Image 1: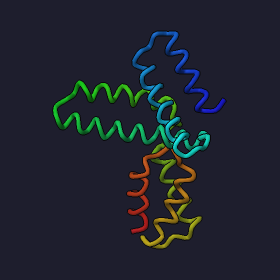
Image 2: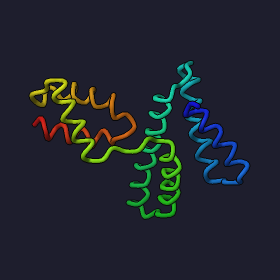
Image 3: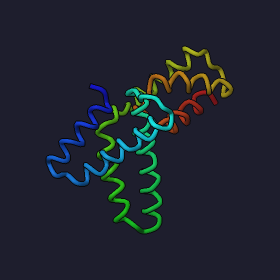
Length: 147
């Protein structure tokens, strides 16, 4: 079963169970997926769906920061609850040790010697860690190793 099919099935089960908050988030996910499919006139595969979900999580994390800095903790809590639902569809995150090993492997595989080779290393890591690591943190680790 594809990830999109799983989300659709979860929408139906949330409707039957009367889980209004979960249903709202699942519908938002399906709407975002459908919007991209219509705009690009393609059927999204699991990797593309994961990309959409990661983008949604990132948007919500940014919103949480904004709401907390503005003193609107009630709205921040809503966003955090949405992030919790979205996280159930994302793969398990890599640990720091796994991430360090992945960075070392990518550096040796690409033969990177300096900061100029960062793009090659990041490209290698992105293909292996898609959805499983914060690429901003990965970029900082790569920069520290190459710099």
